[in-house]
Image (cartoon, rainbow, N blue to C red; front, side, top):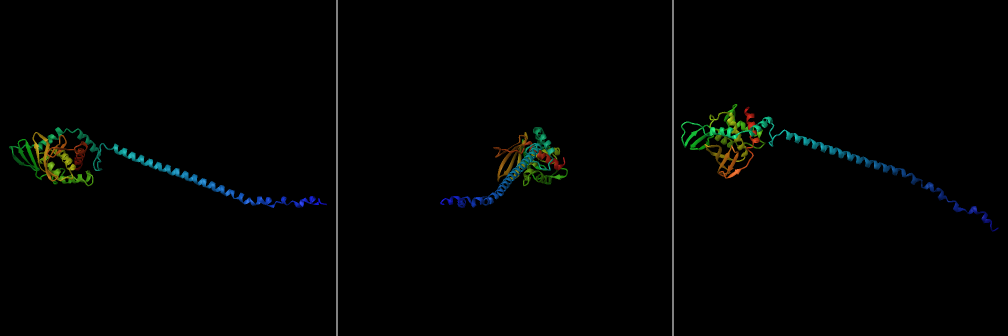
Length: 302
């Protein structure tokens, strides 16, 4: 009778009735169901990053293309500017560049000994009858005093803004044209210096053989008056040697003192301090003289 409980062992099987073990699949279901949204978020983030990288690359490429185009355009403009200019002078739009380039070539071939020196000698040593040493002759532009081979030329104010050389146009109008159309803004021809220098060159309106002679003297006077545009210079008189009429010894008042400026238009040299100090400048270079040549022709219609 004691073995009866062994036959009833199914009643003693509580461990076999494991309810939590059977229900565990139901409890883990929510965790398995939340995994798909995480995968979608990762994919979305990856797509956003890829799109951003591609956009950045495209923007960078567009920027590089824009910079490259700008550099190419600037390079072409610089190349065209160089090819269209024969020298380092920024010619104004009003000047005919073709005429200017032709003038440059003409000035390079200019023989100053025959073309300018000869022209200067005629007015500087005028042929007047019965003029003895130490005689004074009053001409329309300057008074001339003869002392042997030494000739003193004193501007008398007869050459001024109202002086007409050609086409009924006066010097004042011509210098206005130069100031406004040829020179850079804010720069002006030294008018007093221009008139005085030109007066010592031409001396009298009837001594010059023609406009061409006056034109060449005007070119030299313009070169000086432009170079010393901001200096108050008064030419008291000019001393010339009859044997070397291309060298002008100007007795001037400049920088509040008296001085002698020696200018040789044949050698294209300038000396200050009574001829002791050489002054260096590009004002007599062919290309700059050609600018004045063209400006005169443009204004006077030559």
